[in-house]
Each structure stands twice: as C-alpha cells, then as structure tokens.
Picture 1 (cartoon, rainbow, N blue to C red):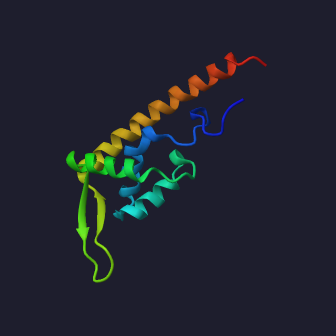
Picture 2: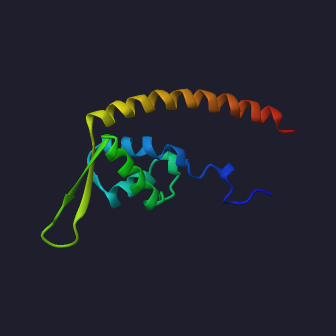
Length: 121
C-alpha cells in the first residue's frame, strides 16, 4: 500500500524551486508572501504551499549569483517587506532552465513508458 506522503505521489517537485522562482519573478516583482502564493499555483507544487524557509534560502543563493535582486521596502505602516525581481542574468538562467526542462520532460516520458511496461498487469 502506498502512503499518501510517499514521494512517488509527486506532490512536490522540490528540485524545481529555482526554475519556479525565476518563472514567477519573470512575470513581475513580488514580495515574499506573494511569491510563495504564486509558487503554490504552479504545477511543480501541485497546489501545495512551498516551504518558506527553503524558498528564502533559494532566494538568497540566487541573489548572491546575481539572478534576482532583493530590495527592502519600508511602508508608512506595517513591517518592512523584501521585494524580489529577476535580473537580466536571471532571465538568461531561466532560458537555460526552459531548455533543461524540455530535455527532462522527454527523459521522464521515456522513463514512465518503461515503468508502465515493467509493472505486471
């Protein structure tokens, strides 16, 4: 019997966080909370909210690499918010991700076909 939280269910493709973050930011800048909400709408998260700690760690890494730019905004009321936007280098990285994802899609389709053949009927 397969457990609901088993990785084989594919409920969270956490290896695609980088490409997912870049994809969301390519549509426009976002604060952390909005970014997390938009990530949860992507197919790579299948309606699950991504882990905020992991996403912020990825954002810091991507800032260090120059793929995203994070700036603090200090509204008149309420706490300061970090606003993230994709850079030109980030756009280039996202283009490379698109190519890699196309290749992965082909590999996964072939693997799925082999897996179906291997399962006894």
